[in-house]
Length: 243
Image (cartoon, rainbow, N blue to C red; front, side):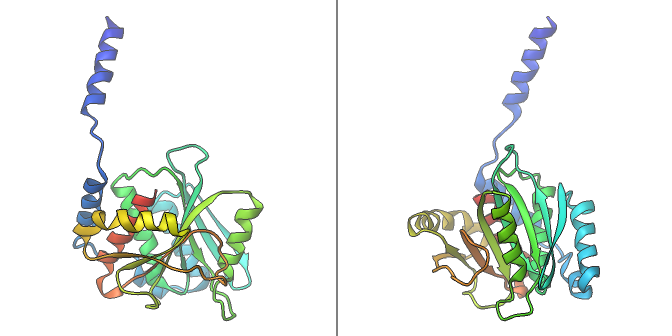
């Protein structure tokens, strides 16, 4: 009798669990950021150097429940990495990155991670958040070069990196895809329908930058700081769909 009751409870529980569609999840993301205050940018602008890294460490560990956090030395200073395991064991990596001298871009990463936590968004891949040290030379990316070396040395698989900035070098509301043309075209065809509730967003194929130190598939996005929460909602939706 106990076994029958247990099986009945399992069946009822399974029946009550409804799969959340991508459209419904994106609506949740939009609602989460609607009217939300920018929690992190002012703090990241206030702090510099080790103090900035201490603040990131505190937020990532205490507020966002990162599984692992570590720093890597480079010519430009320390780069901080935080890891959030995916639901599949030994899942490959997907990265989201920003330079430490771009506080709003770093804040956007924290906002994305907060949304994933608060909305209980499950992700297949292991998400690795990278706050990299700017280099003292013209490339401004020495932290990413060390990250690239570290990934190859550990023989990890990095599926892609979402690179955020506020440089205003890219077109407004446009995700630039540096990937093989065939795969990029699939994204360009499929993604706009999911983004319609969030606004007028665009997806374009872009030629990879040969000087960029992190190799592989790169998705670039320039944040419009005047509409920060709307932008972060779009980045969160993009991160969710890719994962």
